[in-house]
Length: 199
Image (cartoon, rainbow, N blue to C red; front, side):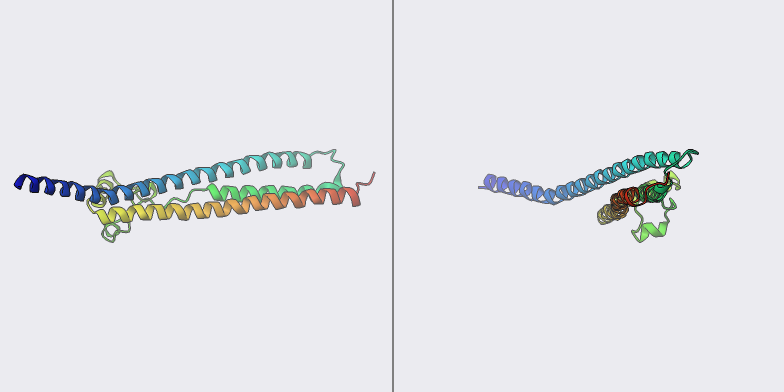
């Protein structure tokens, strides 16, 4: 009957609409989850780096206090203390490098928008631009679905590159601190046992 045919057509339209919506929602969820995970990992890396900086800064302060004392009698421990000081300073340097921000020049051009190479989701690419130029660029991105997805992908990719660099430097900092601390402690025991301070 015509009524039955019309109901079937409506059900098919609803089914097709749901099928069309599913991939889009899945893509949005993917971008959201990936971006959230990247931000969470970045925060964890910053926290670890801050812990290393704080701990090693305290140790450096103590070591410098020992070195500047005029009545410092344990001259045989100068080498192990110096080694430990170098280890702490190197750890601090790598930790700072891991957390140091890298900001671009803050501008983009019309050519960048035409070539779809401008990532306006990161503030470092537009913070020196006027609002009208920024809003025009954003509307151009929002009106082009493929450009929008490309921009989201590029933003996630650059987040991953930054995370890779941050965790690589953080790993070096932890390795320097761990192995350097072990070597320094061994040096303390060796010097104390075989090279005691002369009375």
